[in-house]
Amino acid sequence: MGFKNNDLVIIKDEKEKSFIQRLVKNGRLQTHLGTIYHKDIIGKDDGADIKTSTGNKANVFYPTLNDYIQKMARKTAIIHPKDIAVILLWADIKHKDRIVEAGTGSGALLMALLRFLNSKGHIYSYDNRPELQQMAVKNIEKFYGKIPKNVTLKDKDITTGIEESDLDAVILDFSQPWDVIPEALQALKSGGKFVSYIPTIIQAERLVKELQASERFMEIEILEVLLRPWQIKGYSVRPHHRMVGHTGFMVFARLKGLSRD
Ligand SMILES: C[S@@+](CC[C@H](N)C(=O)[O-])C[C@H]1O[C@@H](n2cnc3c(N)ncnc32)[C@H](O)[C@@H]1O
Image (cartoon, rainbow, N blue to C red; front, top):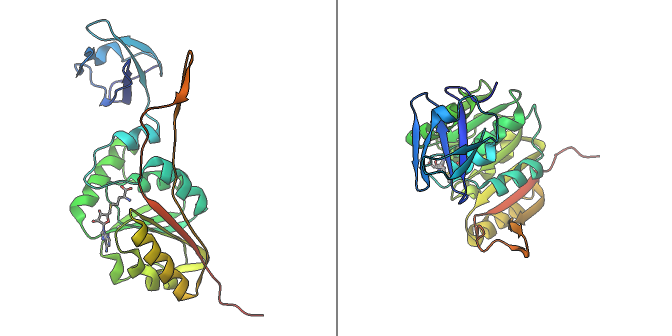
């Protein structure tokens, strides 16, 4: 069947530059390696070779969620996919989970949570700046086609209260996560996961100390993820010259149940 009009694709050129495009019959993409006409893509299979107007080679794919998140429009910092991957497993996210996240921002984490929940469970995504949430709406609609039913976008400052209860996870990506500790204590179920993504170690230290002081959180863990891609080209078998440096620290904790012997 191949690529169709209106499909979302990613074009990767020989210099490893990539471009997200929505295919339209008369569409074209101008690159430093020549023009690529959408009509030369429509009908081709995922991964197919195409030629630019100057004879350079490129390949076309359906974008993975990782491709899309790295290229999508943003008005905020996003959680990098290497960190999202760890959050999903460390927070033990499952299909039927009920999750609160803040802030929505550009929607990178939210898009991955939606993929993991696979139309089940529910995500309540808070942001106190609706204009930033609109960026997430656009990104989700572009990749998934529409806003799934299992997400509720809330225009609300999360430090003023979490309206949901019996949550499996509370995931925070903004500068003062410690302000949400009392709210998270009320809203999480026993064993529920508290997750925070923060840029500096000073913030991480403050958060960990306040979690410890609450005496209700266990298994507090702080980590960062260093991803080092390698290349193998002939004798050039070595790490890439460039790698993503610092993104953020992640703090994980688990709510202790209150039942006694
Ligand atoms: C770094 S961005 C989040 C990025 C998002 N996690 C992503 O992966 O694309 C931080 C967001 O938190 C929002 N925010 C800051 N303080 C907040 C608060 N008290 N309650 C709700 N949202 C807040 C900001 O408006 C901003 O959109």
